[in-house]
Image 1 (tube, helix red, strand yellow):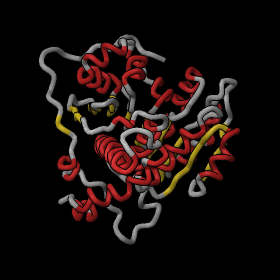
Image 2 (image 1 turned 90 degrees about the horizontal axis):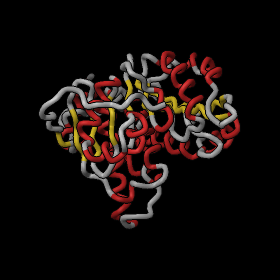
Image 3 (image 1 turned 135 degrees about the vertical axis):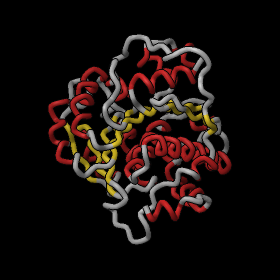
Image 4 (image 1 turned 180 degrees about the vertical axis):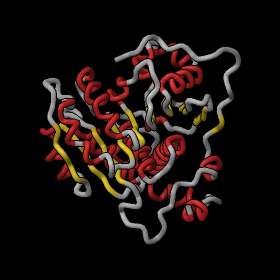
Length: 314
């Protein structure tokens, strides 16, 4: 549900965002579990996503989380699509949850997920959800159960925002239209001043917020921000955002702090699109093809990171 219209906090000149580049990420190396780590060490990600109309959103987010390096995957999806997802993702444990009449997640079934809280490092919540109002009730019931996990909110799950900040690690991934819906601003106002909008949103909700677009802005509650202008037109395609949410969740499951997971996810997503554009052309590649590019990209970036050995020792 949209909250009352958001206004940028404070007055005067906005802070200048840092450029999100490979050089910056080299100072934020991803946690390296080492050569002898098992799947538990690499982190467990829970993807709660999908609907009978958009089961593919859960599939895209789940595969992306594994491609980002998470060691274990659990997918929770509406009952009528769970079996299909289990067959499509043999690497995952898949749970079928009760649905509302509108095809969303029923809050009464949150208790079934509670026992996973002690095991899960990160949660991706929202891709492909239906029935916004009842899905919000589900999300608000679920969040306290996973207070110790980094939670990536996408699509309708983001509508669980309120007037008070989250009291747990949260990453949000709205595009301009979703940000307008969440804040009460017009889409034009969001596009006219994306930096001010994302800074105000991050401060208001106490979350790391990535405002997606041809230029993506990432803001933190402390007023700091990143700017990334390296996307490609082909990324504007169905399922691309689901893939990004899964990448961020997988990186967070590995142990990356929310800002680092978000920044790495945004850059890897864009570089995967650029690789496909070189091979296939600027437009027409599919969101399902993005994730397969990611492991090699992480490997290449990691080799250039001066902090790799330090991350392994940590």
